[in-house]
Image (cartoon, rainbow, N blue to C red; front, side, top):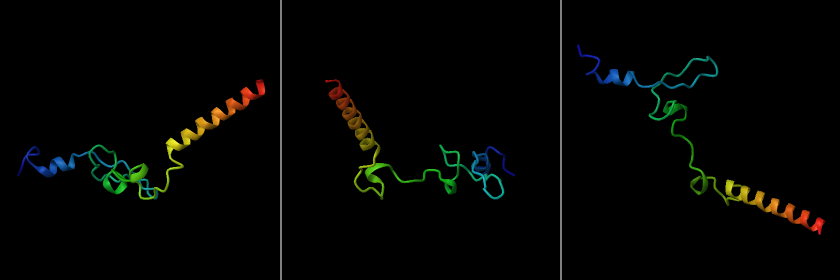
Length: 88
Protein backbone atom coordinates (compact mmCIF):
# COMPACT_ATOMS: atom_id res chain seq x y z
CA UNK A 1 0.00 0.00 0.00
CA UNK A 2 1.20 3.54 -0.78
CA UNK A 3 2.04 6.19 1.78
CA UNK A 4 -0.18 9.31 1.99
CA UNK A 5 2.66 11.48 0.63
CA UNK A 6 3.14 9.36 -2.49
CA UNK A 7 -0.53 8.88 -3.34
CA UNK A 8 -1.83 11.50 -5.82
CA UNK A 9 -5.45 10.95 -4.77
CA UNK A 10 -4.47 11.83 -1.22
CA UNK A 11 -3.37 15.27 -2.44
CA UNK A 12 -6.61 15.65 -4.45
CA UNK A 13 -8.72 14.68 -1.45
CA UNK A 14 -6.91 17.24 0.72
CA UNK A 15 -7.78 20.11 -1.68
CA UNK A 16 -9.95 22.97 -0.31
CA UNK A 17 -13.66 22.19 -0.59
CA UNK A 18 -16.52 24.12 -2.20
CA UNK A 19 -18.43 26.28 0.29
CA UNK A 20 -21.69 26.48 -1.70
CA UNK A 21 -24.83 25.24 0.05
CA UNK A 22 -27.98 23.65 -1.33
CA UNK A 23 -31.12 25.81 -0.98
CA UNK A 24 -33.26 22.75 -0.48
CA UNK A 25 -31.23 20.70 2.00
CA UNK A 26 -28.73 23.20 3.38
CA UNK A 27 -25.90 20.70 2.82
CA UNK A 28 -22.55 21.92 1.50
CA UNK A 29 -21.36 20.80 -1.94
CA UNK A 30 -17.89 19.71 -0.75
CA UNK A 31 -16.58 19.32 -4.29
CA UNK A 32 -12.98 20.45 -4.83
CA UNK A 33 -12.77 24.25 -5.02
CA UNK A 34 -11.05 25.85 -8.01
CA UNK A 35 -7.64 27.31 -7.17
CA UNK A 36 -8.07 30.88 -5.99
CA UNK A 37 -11.83 30.51 -5.43
CA UNK A 38 -13.98 29.26 -2.56
CA UNK A 39 -16.41 27.39 -4.84
CA UNK A 40 -16.18 24.61 -7.40
CA UNK A 41 -16.59 24.97 -11.17
CA UNK A 42 -20.28 24.06 -10.94
CA UNK A 43 -21.01 26.85 -8.47
CA UNK A 44 -19.47 29.75 -10.38
CA UNK A 45 -15.71 29.73 -10.03
CA UNK A 46 -14.25 31.71 -12.91
CA UNK A 47 -17.65 32.21 -14.44
CA UNK A 48 -19.35 35.23 -15.90
CA UNK A 49 -18.69 37.47 -18.85
CA UNK A 50 -16.07 40.21 -18.95
CA UNK A 51 -17.24 43.76 -18.30
CA UNK A 52 -17.43 46.44 -20.97
CA UNK A 53 -17.13 46.03 -24.73
CA UNK A 54 -16.05 42.40 -24.42
CA UNK A 55 -19.48 41.47 -22.98
CA UNK A 56 -21.78 39.82 -25.55
CA UNK A 57 -24.72 42.10 -24.63
CA UNK A 58 -22.72 45.33 -25.07
CA UNK A 59 -24.70 47.83 -27.16
CA UNK A 60 -23.52 51.42 -26.89
CA UNK A 61 -22.09 52.03 -23.41
CA UNK A 62 -24.47 54.85 -22.48
CA UNK A 63 -25.22 53.10 -19.21
CA UNK A 64 -21.64 52.13 -18.42
CA UNK A 65 -19.97 53.29 -15.20
CA UNK A 66 -17.94 55.89 -17.08
CA UNK A 67 -21.00 57.46 -18.73
CA UNK A 68 -23.00 57.45 -15.51
CA UNK A 69 -20.17 59.26 -13.72
CA UNK A 70 -19.84 61.74 -16.61
CA UNK A 71 -23.59 62.54 -16.52
CA UNK A 72 -23.36 62.99 -12.75
CA UNK A 73 -20.55 65.53 -13.16
CA UNK A 74 -22.34 67.41 -15.98
CA UNK A 75 -25.53 67.61 -13.90
CA UNK A 76 -23.58 68.93 -10.92
CA UNK A 77 -21.96 71.61 -13.13
CA UNK A 78 -25.40 72.59 -14.45
CA UNK A 79 -26.77 72.93 -10.91
CA UNK A 80 -23.80 75.09 -9.92
CA UNK A 81 -24.24 77.28 -13.01
CA UNK A 82 -27.95 77.83 -12.23
CA UNK A 83 -27.06 78.68 -8.61
CA UNK A 84 -24.51 81.26 -9.82
CA UNK A 85 -27.12 82.77 -12.23
CA UNK A 86 -29.57 83.19 -9.35
CA UNK A 87 -26.93 84.97 -7.31
CA UNK A 88 -26.03 87.34 -10.19
